[in-house]
Image (tube, rainbow, N blue to C red; front, side, top):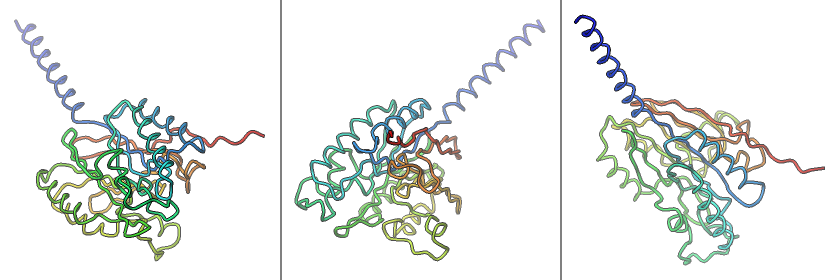
Length: 299
């Protein structure tokens, strides 16, 4: 009888351990952040992007977030060039084996540079091309108890762009956060960084930061999150890898899939992407060099 009792207790213990392990697996997930892809027919960029996609599929995260500058580029391009680049990217993103959540970058904006000679009344002028080809410019989704917010940090005051979250989007952020529990971990994706130390590191502590390099109203945007559990701000645009941790928030600039625009590493940052593992109220991240090398011309 005693042996049977011990056997039954052991069985209960094993089932309990199995359930705890199963619950732990469900609470843990990974996702990849791929920014500054700059896909184009030139410079073997399509082959490089495909290599990055293959590496992501090998790692098999739950989903992918892209950080903008998906194409090279629509700002000063003709309509035909911009159209072909969007078609290339849209086709290639289908090679991921998991969902893809896109973020808009400045190079997705069609025709605002005068060199484009685009008609401002064109139905796909400016950010409309992105909206019609790839979807909403800002939106949110939930995954395993985490709340993700994809923002559009590009504004075009004229024939140029700056980093800014506009007033309509600010109102949307307030409304979206109103339905999010204050304890829920929150992740933001923005192409242009909220915070970066790049220029201070490379140029000097008092170096000027251009309004096209940072979100100029980032301070006001972050105030909207002060009563929420903002864990991580994923950033692109600068083609460097940096992790700034301040006031409980990580601001990670996620390198670039294209490195120095498919010409090699950029300021010591190899071509790569970020892999994030999240569990309950914390996360770990790793920058993945997916192995692409510039193909030197044959002699």
